[in-house]
Amino acid sequence: MNYIFAFSPNEVVDVTLRYSTNKEETLKRRKKFDEKWLEECLELRRSRMWKMEAAEERELLEARYKKEQLDLAKAGRRCHGDPTKYLPTEKDIKVYRDSVKEAMLNQ
Image (cartoon, rainbow, N blue to C red):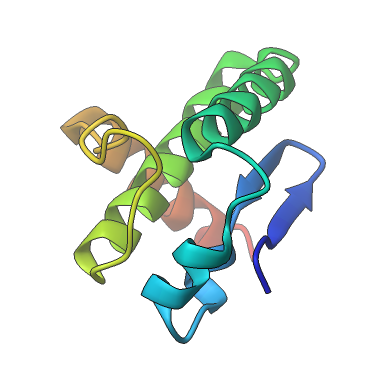
């Protein structure tokens, strides 16, 4: 497979490399779209979707996305565009951890 996208009510993400067994071969086959253009399109769509959310939910979504990009980078997978662009700040990590704790308490 060349492209795998994940859709939810609040975001769309290119998850191809998460499910690829051979990163180099997958990237060689991805010729239909310019990678930078593709990431810009997905980022624009995400930002439009996130603007419809309440500020607290938007912060959570952004923190989750940044954490996922960091996890992919740590796993040796490529983050789209500038790999430092989506590194989470301490505030992002705190928001994410607090939301996880709250969700677990509310179960």
